[in-house]
Each structure stands twice: as C-alpha cells, then as structure tokens.
Image (cartoon, rainbow, N blue to C red; front, side):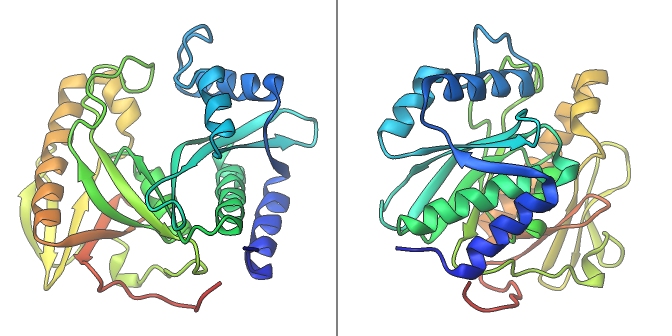
Length: 281
C-alpha cells in the first residue's frame, strides 16, 4: 500500500519547516545513537538507557521501525519507535517518540514520517501513551495531530526511576490517531479555557479542576508538572490523583479526550461526538 500523495507532502513539509531530514534507521551505529538520545531525553545514564540498542534492533528485525530526525549538520534531534499491534494489518503502536527541539517542529516531522511508514504497510491507526499531566504533549497529540484520548491507564508502568518521572505514579493516557485523515480538529473558541459551565471538582490549588457545560467536560492540569514534581513531589502527586479521579470517571461514562487548550484545559466529550473537518487523506 502506498501513502496518499497528500500525506507524503505533509511529511515533507513538516521536515522542511523543522529544518531536518527524517529516515528509518537499521544500522548498529545509528540505532546506538538513538538509544543514547533517549537516555539524554529521559535523563538516565547512557549505560542504562530506557530503550537499549539491542532491543531497538530486535524491534526493527521484527518488522518495526526506528525513525530518526537529523539537522542539516547531521545532529540527531528527534526519534521514534513503532511496532505493529493487533490486528497487524490495521494498527501500529508507537512505543516512544522524543524531540530535542520540539518548538521547531521536529516532533511533528517525526510523527508524520511514522505516519507515512505505517500507511505504506497497511495500517489505518496508530496508538501510544503519554503522561496526561504534561499539557504541551496533550496539545500536540490532540490538536496538532488530531488524535483522541481513548483510554486512561492508572500507574501504567509502576514505579519509574528515570530523571523525569522519579517519585511520581505513572498514569498514562492512550491516544489513537486515525492515520487516514488529515488533521481533523480546529480548536473552537469555546474550548480555549475552562470559563463557563459548572465547577464539579476542585484542584489542589483551590481553583476549579473540572467544569461541566452540557455534555462537555473540561479538566485542568498544572502549568508544568515536570517543574512541579521537582519542586514539590507531594503537591504533584495530589494533582495526579485529582486529575485521575476526573478522567477515570469520565472514561467510565463513555467520554474521550478530544482537545487541549493553550491554558491547560482538556476537553472531554461523549465518544463519537467530536467534530471533524476534512476528508480522507
């Protein structure tokens, strides 16, 4: 199967905008460089990387892909790893993705390269998980890519000891990206904050955590959970538990996460109610 020209053009444009080239990596030295890159991002010693080179090489051998983004000077600045899920012919699982310079669009370039690779092998969707308290990642996944938060996982990995997550519980939000559609979501003005509606939960800072307006539920996350976790782990954990309570109940009621505003508010709506724009890619 070949990805539609529009999809390939989008991937090319994303790489050009970011000033990088993207490619799949198969050689030993290239995969070792990606493993080192992940160690640097997750602040672990390179001797104990979160994704060892031999594991990455095995995933490639099994039919998965390691994508890398390099600057014009040849510096590695982004990488991602994907494998086929179930059923093999339709779903791809992205194990990890990271970019050193996300403000330059490197993350988008890597994800679009993954999209082309997956579509050319017959996949129609891609799933991955991320920390739901990291608002910038939520906005990238839900708004920039147009994925949906489809599953809330409580303490998914158990205790983690890397430099970013140490001391916290590892709740994760699963997102599902329909690879066959162009970016479907344009943020509506009413989704720009938690203003309006009735407060239904209070955050650890005393302000509203969740508000409801009709069938729409909005939930706030802290401004920067990574900095908060480093400065006050106990307070960060209270935020974790508060957001968890909102999300687990919402998902039990049949909601999905469909957007994230610039000021840190998720939009959750009943499954299937998301407004989409554009047709198949």
